[in-house]
Image 1 (tube, rainbow, N blue to C red):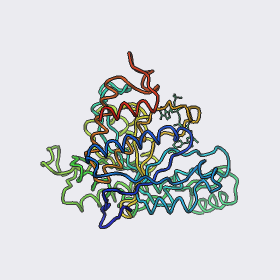
Image 2: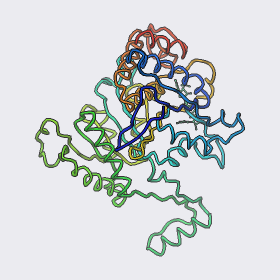
Image 3: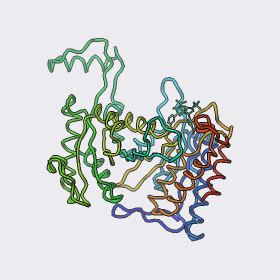
Length: 397
Ligand code: NAP
């Protein structure tokens, strides 16, 4: 049965139809494993009452092989219709004319929030001394900023026009410059910060940090900070860090604060336990979410989702790429896609199944039964194939 959406809530039947995109490259390895683990957890958590009705959406090389566009209207409509989708990685061919399918999905469906929870799984080799102190959820704005795709190559007529326009405004720009535009709107800031605060309230988090570079880019990054605060003070659950004057926030309140992006990279390394939910612009968020993931074990373990909370469309995806050299070898780590599947279960409201997977994955890592990427960093670990790792997690559910 189709998943519905009303008043900001996903309406989920016991046997919801959920879309899946297998993905290119290692998608064929990780996608079936993730779905099998999810199915086993749902079966167990609901004693057979609930079950996902998975429907494939053809995209990427599989669509091409079936004589379709790599990302056609049919696929985009299917994502919209199913509302909730588990997506493997898709290739972006190198060279002119190829747009990233991943970016196209986000843009076409206006999936404005890229949500990346970053939390250490005990036993996973990490690059910092106290990875257990990292537990943040990053909300990255997904539609604006220098990522909006408004740019012109050096020497083009458009670039020349822009340079002439800027000259007229008193700004000297070298004639051989490529030009890019950085739009940041109040509207997109408001909806992103609202999503971050709603999440903080729903998950009983204690702070939301606005990360920006407003000291330098006053009318774009600075706007994000300003509009972010304006949005936040509209919530009765929120207090500003400034108003607390160093005191602790009253129980149940969420502190809204802001940090400059470069300082935030340091803060996440030095005092990660002081940060909780983070809301940030597109480029800052791109860097920050991968850097944070690296602290707790890298992209192979990092989940993510691209969500439009107003229209109720959510695509949960592996954060790594197609790793073509390992494609079809049943070798790579399925955890990124599986943990994105855990986020998917949480959106469905199936928290028990989600919790079971997290616990079973942690147990499997504690048992040192892992895929090659973790095995090579651990001593005394048993090397498992992708599918064997999935079976070990299922046995630990
Ligand atoms: P990549 O596919 O993420 O692979 C880079 C390296 O990361 C791999 O060689 C491997 O490292 C490691 N890795 C990736 N996934 C892993 C997994 N599941 N388990 C263990 N290790 C894993 O990055 P890329 O080679 O730059 O990109 C390849 C293609 O993917 C490109 O076409 C790119 O456009 C696309 N891409 C898609 C997405 C997406 O769909 N969201 C995201 C990024 C890139 P070792 O070699 O050290 O083992």
